[in-house]
Length: 612
Image (tube, rainbow, N blue to C red; front, side):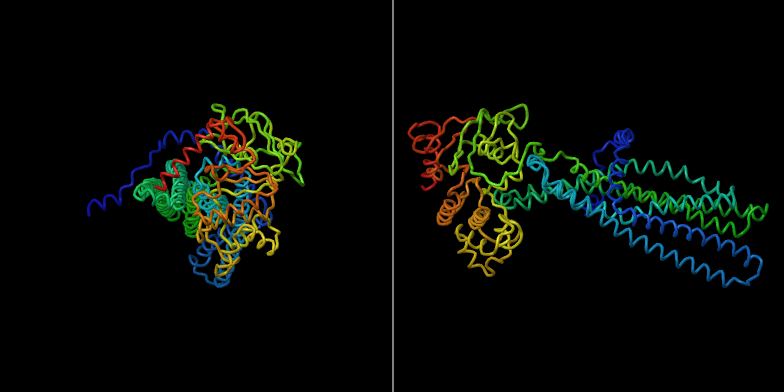
């Protein structure tokens, strides 16, 4: 029991050098100002409404200052002197002042909510749009859950801060300025006493925010990593269970959750010092004003009782904005940490822009030529070396070879997910660099090993291949793909709702829907990645039959893992270590008894062993 209690309240500080981090932050304060400026540019889309908000903030601050002044004046004029004539009218005036103050507060909050939601809408839309401009390589290097965290948690953090912080900051600044001006006019001596607390506030807040700024950023980073782990764990749940790695995943989650817990704990602990500090200084300010003010009123007569009452109210209005600014600054640091993570993505270099000479193409026959193509992801190692071949219209080109031979890379070059670092790729005689990517990919169809289906109806998932297709066209495509049979047996047929990634149907049925989608798109060039892997024999026959229909009259690139599926390919390219070591028909390569022959024999032997 004791151990459980000590563990529950044990929060080791995150492994962060606050002193050195603070120095780094002080050396580069432009990061915060740059982030705030960029947020302002989003807010500035609604300058007119923002001006009205600031106007209402000014009105509410002015009325808030006017109320205590009238109250103090009433004490000197009516209560101290014992003359109550007109006192009722003064109370009525105070009531009107506070009523309009409430109206101004309501309007500024109402309008600011609209501004913040519109701002966050633009920010989220820009971020989501940026995701679709980034190259595939970016997503290969990032956890999907961590990226999702930026769209959800980080932007929501910005949203909640904009809803409250902008008004609070403007209100606090205006209230501070107005309060100091009026206090100086009433009594410079009492004003000086009120301002004594500022140095203590400054150094106390500096000590706190130097720590909270770093800790809140660490908190957001840990939250992103935790979301990434959870997303991977849920997406790969079958693998986790297959290898009995549940305990390992739980331990990893505990570790990352513990890091988040510690960062969040210390961030909140340090930020929690703010109200305590402000409350202590507030009480000290009250004591000074009442004590010294009473002495000045009773012994020297330099101030009146009403002025002391005004100063007591104004000292609260003076320290409250400082308190609000401190709290909002702390919240602002958390929002800036989230905004910086969003802007990091927005600042990523998008996929290479189309060349100035690139044009759209209406039709593609499908003649593809590789001329001495080389490629490397970095300068250290070439993935492809001097790849040269030609695929004529209607040909089926199979790519075989061991893992890492370069099969997938060739596909990525054809689709322009990457550009070759050497040589040229031609389609119908023109360099693909002279064709706009979107236009090029619109003439391509994909049937991949890992079929992805969106949450929605079966009809909508097939229609993804051609958004303006009629229901009849969708159904014809499904029939050609041998998918109509199983779709018709579903309770709602084509209107059956698929769960995320089609988890409600089998892998083979997913492949049939993917083929139907490609048939509907009617592309000139097909990219096929072993569509019959891990499929039962009957479903495989259906898929093979559907693929034959799909591939008819189209140039097809087939990444083959099982060699018995590519016997009828026009050309088989055998790759190893990024080079083409053999090429030709199945019969030719078998007769050569080279690398391809050995691959086939190994697979044949492995198949026999599995049957035994």
